[in-house]
Length: 159
Image (cartoon, rainbow, N blue to C red; front, side, top):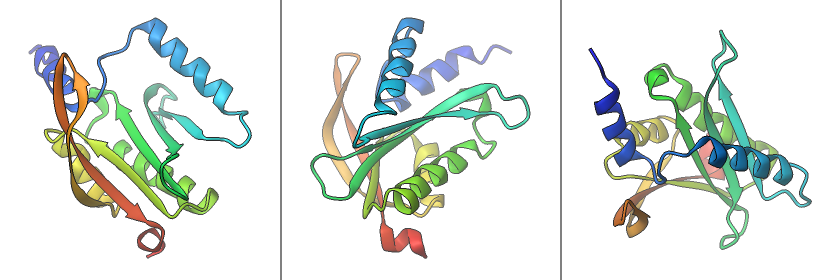
């Protein structure tokens, strides 16, 4: 049975960006390499790999929020064939640990599509709280889409 169509439909609704071309991915990786040596460092882009094979299965990112003191935004994306295996929760926990334990942040937040129930569950499992909706936050496919914000504070992470 071909599941490509349903997977593409889910991805189209869940991601805040359009699928990227190979050249766009190369530009993203090159930018991550450059930002890794910035002082002060403003973002951390991480590869998510399968433990058994070492194969790339996704990415995670945490970036300092220039509008809030000691705060950062984060996001993650995984290949659909790896969903449900715990990589999402592990990635979120790793990004939160980096933010709170290594970078000394006070608040980390991320936004998701209202239709991305799996990400909502993952962030809740990591201790994040759903805070509300940013109306018409993302322009995707020529249409505005809301985003649902989830966040966690330093004292909540410490528990």
